[in-house]
Image 1 (cartoon, rainbow, N blue to C red):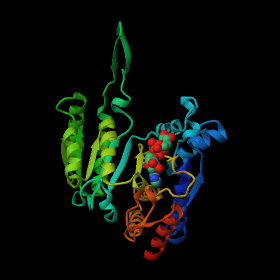
Image 2 (cartoon, helix red, strand yellow; image 1 turned 90 degrees about the vertical axis):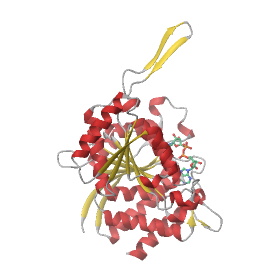
Image 3 (spheres, rainbow, N blue to C red; image 1 turned 45 degrees about the vertical axis):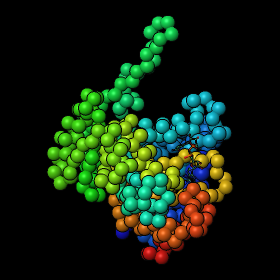
Image 4 (cartoon, rainbow, N blue to C red; image 1 turned 60 degrees about the vertical axis):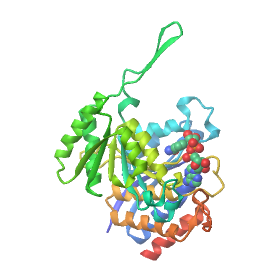
Length: 368
Ligand code: NAD
C-alpha cells in the first residue's frame, strides 16, 4: 500500500522532545517496512519556539499546520517560561494552534491494556479490557459563551457569570463525529447532558436525537452528567462512545483517564471541520504535559506519544491495520513486563524512554 502523507512534527518542551524522538523512530519504521511515505516536517511550538523566535506559536508553524495532513505534538511548558507575559507563555502556543486549526472535537480514548489493569485504582474486573472513547466538544459551550464576567454590585458584593450556549449546528457537527466513531467501533453512542436542569442541553439532546435518526444502525442513549460520572467509575465498560459538552467533557475525560492508570499512557486527538475535498484538520498529542520534574533524565514514558501516532494512522489516514500493529506492539512490550518509572510495579523491568521505544520497534519488527 502506498500513501503520501504530510505530518507536521512539533516536539515542544521538556519530555515532549524526548517522547517525540521515540515516535519518530516508529514513523521511520512504518516508512521502511510498510511502504508508507510520510513527509515529516519539524516545527516549533511552546517555550522552545519562544526562545528561538520570540513567539510560542510562530507564523511558520501555523502555516505548516494548515499545509500538513496532520500535526503530531509532544507537550509544551515549563518553569523557565512561567514568568513571561501571559501572551508569550508556551500554553498560548497550544491554545493558539487549536484555535487556528478550528479544532472542535477532542477524542480521548480510555483504553486499559491487560498488563496494566492491576495498576488502576479500581478493581481489576471493573477496568480489565476497558476500551471507551470520550468525545468532548472543544470550541463552544460555557468556556466560550457570552456574556461572561465579574461585575460589581455595590459595596463589597459582586456577581460572577458565564453562559452555557450551543447552536444546533455545533451540536450536530460533534454529533456526526460521535456517530462516525461509533460506526468504526461498537456502534453505541451515549450523549451526556443535564437536560433536567439546563435548557441549552435540552436542545443538545433534541439535536443529538436528530443526528441519531440519520444513523439508524447506531444505538443512541442519553444520560445526565451526574449519573454518567457515577457510572464511569461503577461500570465503565457499559460505554462505547461518550459524547458531551466542553465542560462536562473536560471533567469526564479526566475521570475516565484515571481508570487507565498513568498519564504516560494516554493519547488524544483533536479534529476540525473537513474542507471541500474531505480533508479534516487534525492534531494528535499525548494527554500529559512537559513533566519538568523528570525532563532531561531519559525516563519519560513514550507510549502516550506512540499511541497518539497510532490514532493519527487510524483517524487521519484510515490505516487501521497499521494502527492495530502499533497498539499490539505496545500491548506486547507491556505484557513482557517492561515499564517506565510512572507505571513501574514490583517484579517488572524498569526501562528508559529509549529502551521502551526500542522495545516497541522490536515488537513491530517481530510481528511484521
Ligand atoms: P504533567 O503532565 O507535565 O506532569 C504531571 C505528572 O505526571 C508529573 O509528575 C510527571 O512527571 C508525570 N508524567 C507526565 N507525563 C509523563 C510521562 N510521559 N512519563 C512519565 N511521567 C509522566 O503536568 P504538570 O506537571 O501539571 O505540568 C507541567 C507543565 O506542562 C506545565 O508547564 C503545564 O502547563 C504543561 N502542560 C502541558 C500540556 C500540553 O502540552 N498538552 C498538558 C498539561 C500540562
